Image (cartoon, rainbow, N blue to C red; front, side, top):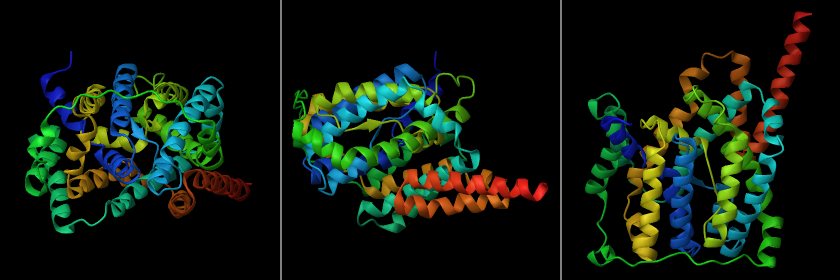
Length: 371
């Protein structure tokens, strides 16, 4: 049985990953015109499945590459759904082949550190896409969040920040938006044209990001956080659960979804240790979709980005873990820091390949100098 104190912490930590969730979801609905009912329904179901399967705060996130493409108008909503279906099939297939494990064994620890730092920096840079924010209140809330970690309120620091920040800066939606508007997602299979467009434009960039961030890096961090159950947190299991969820939920209007290293770091940083936080997040998404339907977005739009940004920055710090970096050798640090601009300019997969080549070269030079 989970203790009351831990249960409160888990519920508070359920909101820790809003920095990834809110901007992409708002962009997809408000800019790209995506149906919020199927989107939130998909997140709710997948989150509940993830909580049940892993019993840990293994998050559910939008697949960033294709979501960004849809927001930018590079692909339409039908192609986005088709991508979810195709990548779901791909993930199920590779989960049964051992291909991910082979790839991971080729990645040195130095490169994994570089990927974590690159992802942490990219999380911070995502705050620049939040639009116009007031930096004064943002800094105050960030300092408040850090200060709460040193108090008895650490367990509910995320919830305190969200509630306090909203009361300070938010605008409560009009009363009419509180009325229930019951809805269920509709079933719609992607067209052949949408499947073709997905394979041509969206599938490969997202696969590269999913393999590195959602599977390999998430498994590495999960084993570090939860060393008592290493067999549970494997790349193959993450691929299987993500794959099945996308195949089943994409026809219901869900966007492509995956697990994620940044989300795991965010939930863990706020005290989540079980699947309760993810389940609570799922219940909120599912309830919002079914009870409030299309008008759900009024609640999300009301959340100030000045409240979301401190969550992103704090999660990025925990993910990158700077104190551990400076215990490494200077030659390793050189590779790690060099991976960051490569990742920001070209993506995580090119950064991974560059890091592997650089680390291999470093080891060769060491062998030559000792012989």
